[in-house]
Length: 277
Image (cartoon, rainbow, N blue to C red; front, side, top):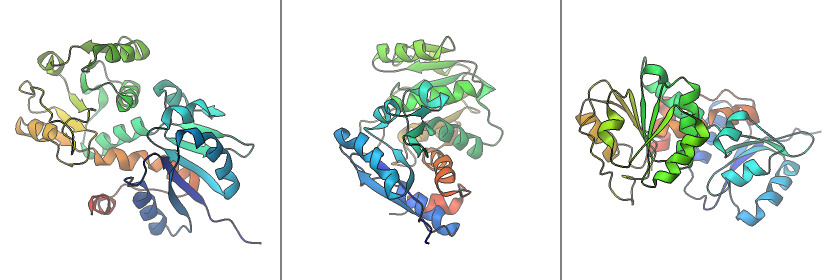
């Protein structure tokens, strides 16, 4: 009687650009695990039937990405508190009795990236300024509030969207108008860009960062390019900068460990592999 080869994967639409298979393949090879991590392009209308079928084919779980994160949470048999709070899932683990548990590890990945890359940094060091109020911002707000951030100053081009997040996450989230950077940055300890501004193929990051000062930590969730215009501007003003690649790496750790029974590590050689063409 042969043992089943453990399987996992990532579901999105499109999915050809995903670097997750490279990352999980690295961990599998390093730990000598005879498993596979497979990219799957799935139409939204087919998501539920695919998730029902995969465990029969030996899959332990999957990551889900755009545009499936909200639907994956809605279809879960169980969900972690952080997935419920964020309103989306990216990590699904199939359950023995059918169905799956939904989790969201994006906020964990964001926090772990900063904690690992910036020695001595803590969320409770001071106010946090956040640019953007999309899906990634929800995960980041949850993680930073859970970690003790005293206040989050949130700016989004559409103010109503930011106000929706403030309503969802409570009084420690304060909404500012787009462009009120002086007020957002005053005495802030951490500054986060969650928008696509400055990403390859997107409009430039054009907010005024003149109020930034040495000692602040600045981070961008974008990692293409690795040194975004936002991070370059922050570094010129003396801020410590942390790029967004680590968030991608760290968010994958919990799923890998659950599905393959491994011990995933975020290392310099993994970063180098992910940055290679």
